[in-house]
Image 1: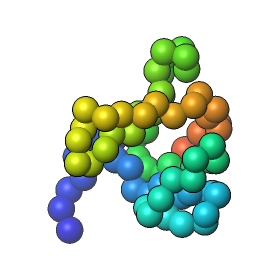
Image 2: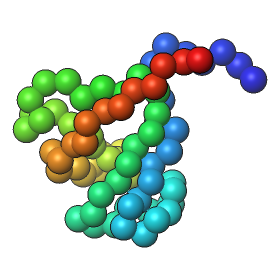
Image 3: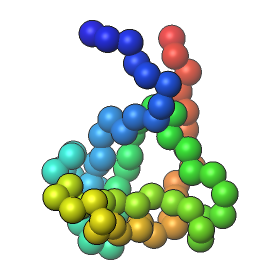
Length: 76
């Protein structure tokens, strides 16, 4: 196993609508993003999470600004 980098990492995306992880996103439903060093800073109307198509990164969709409170965990 290698050493982790300094940047943010998304580990899993849980689609609460379908109950699947890293498979699909249900339109107009809730997702839970788990990872390390993830932050959304600034005005939610101007910042947020954008998804890009893997086959054409110029196609993006911005997620709605309904964010749940972050519950960071300390390393053991």
